[in-house]
Image 1 (cartoon, helix red, strand yellow):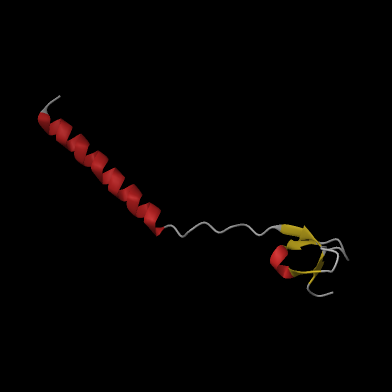
Image 2: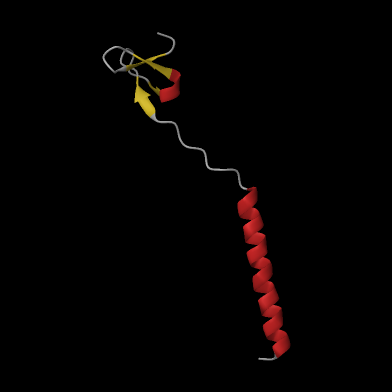
Length: 64
């Protein structure tokens, strides 16, 4: 292999690395999935932030 060919391959690898790093920076941070809990009153599964606690540590829908 000639020196020119080695340099072309090295530049190509460098460009791929730079491209991948830029793509990683642009990606928004991963969102955490909401934990689903069962409503103690009606049995529907909802994200925990859409429920409210009850005295017995069970969760109920916000609309009950």
